[in-house]
Image (cartoon, rainbow, N blue to C red; front, top):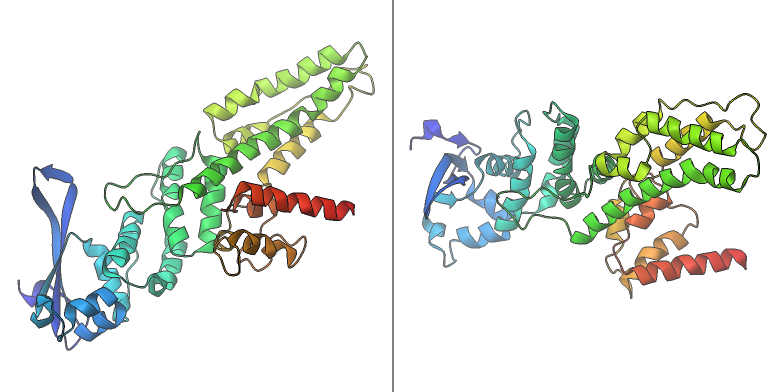
Length: 367
């Protein structure tokens, strides 16, 4: 292949890396279908400095045949992802205009394959994340695309992105939140505990909304007036009219966000002559329930997740010590601002240690 078909990233160049990408969506037995191939003119020593794997492969004193070759083939790699890696290694500009989430995942896969340092693309990913505009025509498509960012933001240490995506999924996922399985690089997935905690946060949102909406009904059940039945029926009928009752069924069929948006249309006033116990501002009650739920969860916190990693004698002690350093500051030392729920659901350790810690805090306040 002539150099006119190549992408020159080093001048002078002493090595050509030809990247061959296969189409894993098309299989003919054991025959691999080539999707595209592209040669890159690079600097050998630059590659060696950026990868232990490539350093060993290209070491002139090593045992690999590639060390003496001036044209090396990388098979079964994403051409776009490898071009980005080569450009970053050689301090060349990267055009992000057509880079999709699939390529970002391939960047991470290439890092694992060739022992590349992911910290070298943190800044690039931050720029890409700010520029990314999901191409979608339907809210369900948006949720699917945004969900695919959960793993890259976690792996590439993007705290703002990880918090945003996890918050978005908690409020905008239909049913159980799951990662989208890629057709290749199956090892690129989150720890199962992260998804478990994200679903627990979504379940808590449902509970918060239920409690705030129906605290008033408990009061009505205990009232001894004659108008309580009519008031209770009117309140729940008004919720039914905006498709927010029965809440358990509506949340199963819809996202939390859809139900919250429906509650903006809630209208109900008690009938003239209602007693003082029944005559409440139900529109304000629903508005406060909606606002409390909307502001409850700020997403998962990468820094709180990271504090599950042992730095002293015990990983769980490390995590909870994060709070005791500055009592009440749930986001102390974190790159994103968040409240107690994000701190709570970002815990990746043992439940019994978390519960014991919270119990000791409550006892300390009582003392």
